[in-house]
Length: 369
Image (cartoon, rainbow, N blue to C red; front, side):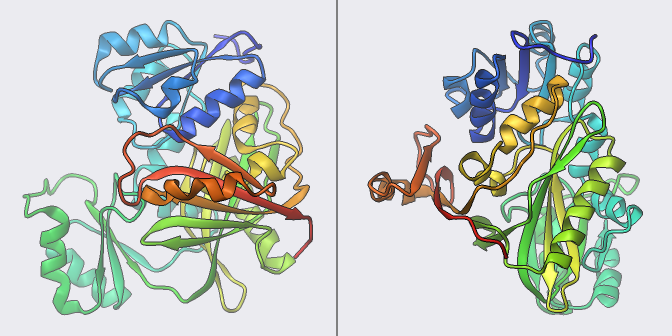
């Protein structure tokens, strides 16, 4: 297996959502073919990729055939089963590595990882039983959020606990009253509330040669646990921005990352930075880079995993990215009519409430914070 993948090679993408779609388009611009592996028919990426396999993530025959037709693999969401990635990695390079994916898939491992690199988080405790939850509540206090350790995103698998008396009900709801294996890893984590002034994120890219480039911090606003807007640049001090970028760089180095990682953080009233979570893949809060930077997060990922030099991710415009959720896609005509807006529609047929159907980025003249 060679380190560098030259244009003309084929990039395998595990997952077929909008991130995979935009990644396939970026790959095509650089002269690469793409092969998407997705468990659902009609996925957004399948309409623009060179090849598409629709099969279960535990279909060994389909996985082996997929691996035999690609030169390198990456993923567009972190809930790909571990055994799937391991099987692909036996045949071709998977970038970022399974180590990065494994940490991001488990909130307890993720928080321990950030502690190891000297990045602060909200107070938290691992939880595997109702008794452990009661002890965690005494340590963390209320209000707090009980989260599944794995497979949670966009607010899924999260329950607010306002009083310690709510513990039993919250645990029953989160576990669906199932009996847990006492020898298994923690089922959940309890996170204490933090008082913050803003939510920010930084996307770091790291190449095969160890070169690291970071997009500048952006400010995120969530509604109903789903990202609503991203504003670039973030309205934070230069010192806070430097701290945030430093955390993302340290994470990329510690993971020995080849690819990109998005790190979401809270900014406190005194300018401190607390890490919330990370995703070693393209990220919703990086969509603004498609139109406001010299390069974008998707192109940077292709460069990194193929062994090409990373580009300078300099911002040339201010930007506000807004997600088009559910039936919000029906208002897209107003954005089409605005010359300052760049519109992306993902090709999903069912506009369910809260579903990411597209996004729009409005550009304005560059200013610095």
